[in-house]
View 1 (tube, rainbow, N blue to C red):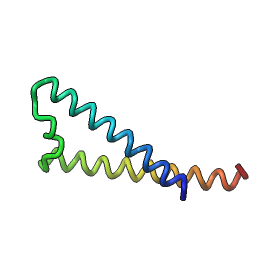
View 2 (tube, rainbow, N blue to C red):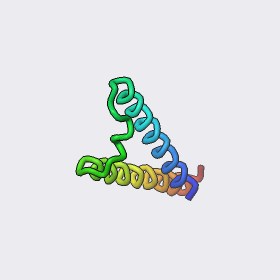
View 3 (cartoon, rainbow, N blue to C red):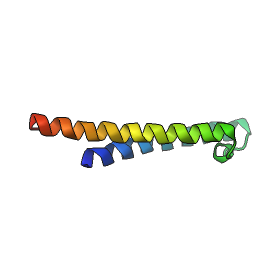
View 4 (cartoon, rainbow, N blue to C red):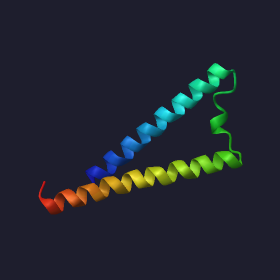
Length: 73
């Protein structure tokens, strides 16, 4: 399960970096940098996308653990 947690944390870290970059760009442009958190139809899409990608990252980590255990590494 260590790989699943690692995959989740790496994916979460990438999402946080993307969020911070987006907020920085919006702040430089003079827009509200916290508009990302508004629960509008686009916000729901982003939330679902983030959840699916986090699940994929976790699944890849779990699959990596299983593959390593089969090969003896």
